Image (cartoon, rainbow, N blue to C red):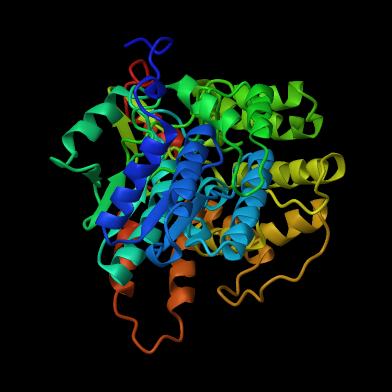
Length: 467
């Protein structure tokens, strides 16, 4: 049926939908986990569940309902503020009205955050064929929360604001994982977790009709949500991602301000056009990241070796690896400068585009894995932002002057300075350990990396064939 003519309310009332939700809740003695992303679909699902359970006697509202939202730490600030305020209101009203709702925000582990991977490890900006961010920043944190509840309760029901027709792949998965004679579906990857989609048969018009006619039970103004969509040119929210079948962000959806998977961030452009001028530095930084995907720029900003130390050539084309350490230093400085601009021009003078924990982790990675003997992170931070208390760095005794001396000696002997620096770092990290098992294999692994320069690699192949 065409989107414009179909409406679930032609055949069902809101009371009918409430009754269905109540039946699923009472029939399945399991806690619920509702994925809330701040957008129209997840808000509709959450409101429906709230009102349905509100109609039950207090003694029957005995299964907890966890409302979780995913914060990748690079979400668009306007959306972060909206979600945070919503969850605060919801928590207060739930306590006041004795509703079984609890809120939580899930975040990636420090080793999985965007900046630790991009600036710390040098991962290139994500694109359609290398979308390394989704699993680390969204799927893993949400799934960990769900699995923790599975461990605690045995089984859980995941409530998602998904609708038929949003994605062909998603529709196929919903069909494949449906359970006969049940409103529940099996989770695609997590054992003992089931999925319930209360708005699966809603059309887009149904969603907006519901939100504009049914007030928010936690005192939000749903018209503000309409304004968010209008101001951002958004066609949808970035859903809470729990598997790789969930529709990706992009196409003007609410999501990460750093997203480079899409050609243009129409959502952020929309916010800026609607008066949020302070977000312009964010857009400029995002566009700069997107430009690094230009093939002509790769030789200048990316290593000629992969992160495993090997050279990869496919169809006579050199496949570049991570960003160089020098370029990562440039990105960190640009990010901190962007943060300072947003602090001065935006509504939050204390906003952090990168957390202190991320800075510490990047510093550790650079020092122990990328031979940053100059200890650049504190220097860059102090230059742009100002002094802060840094963790005492006892991971290495090497300094910038040591690096200069080593470079001079290696140049004279014709030995790659990074090779020797890496060997010294490995020895230093294991120095003083009671058991040094494995050091020989680590050293052997370093020697088996491809230490040819890019020029040597190109010279070893027919220059007319290598791109």
